[in-house]
Length: 377
Ligand code: UD1
Ligand code: UDP
Image 1 (cartoon, rainbow, N blue to C red):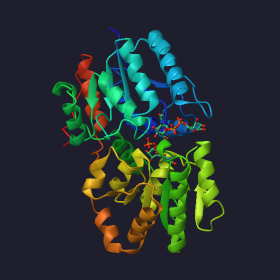
Image 2: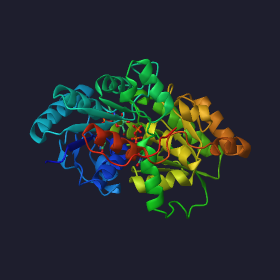
Image 3: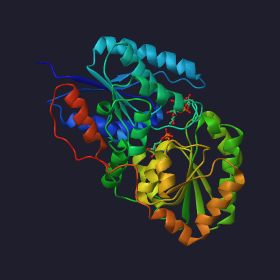
Image 4: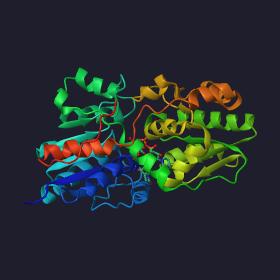
């Protein structure tokens, strides 16, 4: 009898990083499943870089990325491409993570072809459908049609229950991003920036909600922090989006203690996070990973669908206001007790075994019994 075929769909850097542990876990059971890795190619270099950190490459690549394309163009190309591919390869199950447009399209293409869909990192919510834009819509729409929901935390599971998702469709797993970051930290023990004497302040920003003036305020505030604290080095890992780069370069290029760097491959980025004294970010994944290493995070957004880190005291939601970023950043860079209070909080996002839990549920849905990991609470 043919093995059940599972298609894992990725499109962007975070999709690759958070899906890689699931793909590797399914591949461990290759006598039970056929695992196919599908990329929409919403991202190009950043996606390949992230997959290759795990020794993975897509089996099917739709190559939809074009500079400056609209959200509707991403959606129509990804949806049409995935539909044709699913018709061709006939997967028994489709799985994808999070809130990107590639993930939303994977869920919809699976739904239209009546293929069961597993949503990894399900149930995160903000109160506003348009913030983060368009991710909150992507995530909620995917949640409406998913067969199985894999919320990373109890809070995310509760959001799903409130929306009427039946209990037997929900399993709290922890975040697969924590599986990924722990695997990387273990596999590549060498340091990065180890030879620099300065304290590192790491900045990443790419959110559409922050394009333009908010991002300029973020860059100005980060520059002010570097000016005020002469023992710090501001390292800016620039997203490949040309619009984001233009804003960051406009404010920070030429600053003596700022390094504007190309997005480091995942294993090096993990080392950079571990080496940092403070992280400023509007990234979803980075705000989850930093607490795993005890590095305080200032979240550069008005809302977050990841309140656990803020509630636990590992992260602070500061938005994009110049004064708020400078005030909080200065406090953490000059008051060791304030820094310690945030860095000693343990990670609320996972224990590194999320993918094993997901593999067990998918297997069972396909009539294959594989070992069960202990629950994550
Ligand atoms: C997308 C996701 C967002 C996620 C982010 C992770 C959607 C709608 N948005 O952001 O949820 O947080 O990815 O990074 O799904 N580019 C390259 N090379 C790359 C990647 C991007 O040149 O490898 C450039 C291209 O010009 C591309 C642009 O960046 O058009 C933006 O890519 P896009 O997929 O639209 O990114 P975001 O929507 O910003
Ligand atoms: N990341 C990386 N290199 C970078 C910046 C981020 O490998 O230069 C990793 C980061 O550790 C996290 C993921 O990319 O796992 C987050 O991606 P991004 O911030 O683009 O997306 P988001 O999480 O906001 O959707």
